[in-house]
Image (cartoon, rainbow, N blue to C red; front, side, top):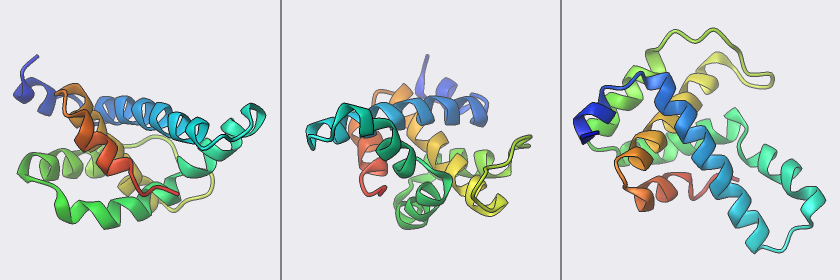
Length: 122
């Protein structure tokens, strides 16, 4: 796939990839911190919640290039049939947009950028 092919994928598909990469990255970081194995899921879940991702989106969206802005906009405006348990629809949409941009960067091989985008999620 070319970068353009990836850019044109369904934004919710990109968000699914971004969600999976985010989960793996966060688990890796948590394990490196020495967190007990039985606590990994709880810690990762608190980091990967929509409210935390929405806050991170607000920080990093100013660094998006034109393509990332397009991916984020399409993901933010996509028809979403689910609702986050503990987030507003706006927070959920921003989290989805961030995940889509992370997924886009992962699929084009820009792993460092994907990690950078996740970086400050707490």
